[in-house]
Image 1 (spheres, one colour):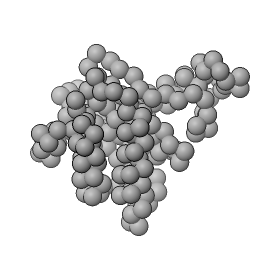
Image 2: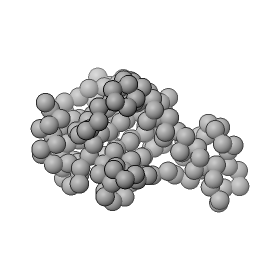
Image 3: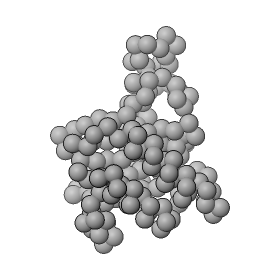
Image 4: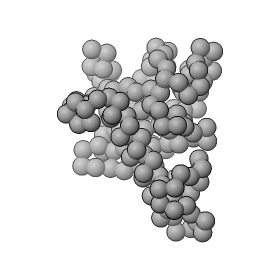
Length: 166
């Protein structure tokens, strides 16, 4: 089991953090630039979240398809799986969105992503006095804690960490 990459978006859709452990096909072979890749990932998340909220059979007051929705409104979209990867999502009440791409055999990672947000992001980013909320950040402490957390949860191997550092 392994992680491929992680995106963290602010409530406006700006990617405030991106880290890659393993990506056999470069961004240039796909989206073109890392910024375009990040925009496409956020667009995918936004579209699927809105689609799920619109299709929710339990919500009588569901929004029109494509209408911006309030954070937490409607049913939650958690993941999708393709033949080669699994894309896991978490949106927290503050509007921060975590997107973790993993091996397709990864289990449901909702609790893992919530713990990553609570124990790693909040602890090493939000509580950092140098952090400007909603702005891109770089933090060696965050990266080390993230790698240790994912390794502890069986989602990252030491070899992947070494390859990502190169």
